[in-house]
Image (cartoon, rainbow, N blue to C red; front, side, top):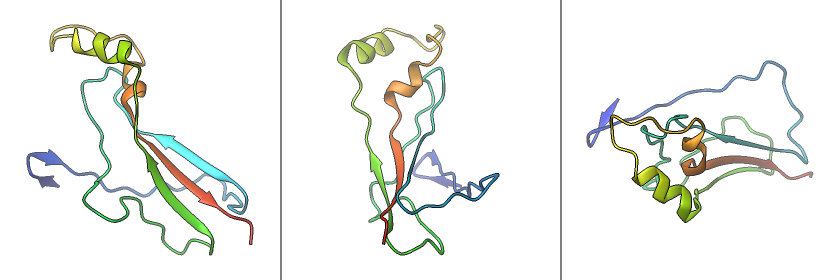
Length: 103
């Protein structure tokens, strides 16, 4: 879906095997390995991550990236026709977090 000149993605992440959530956390990042595509969580909503039928005590959060200034400088030096080093995008990726407290 297009919104304000951005493409919005919505997706469901089914797990191959169900995991017991109590006392565990799940962390993930979504990024373009080459850095040129930016993935952002919607800061305009109260909660950009939504849980459906989650056990009581589970919550989500977004930890925003805080890349090293050297990585920022390296990325800034790459033009659109240049090649980014493999893995550069992960330094700029926010981290989604799912945590479930033990009742």
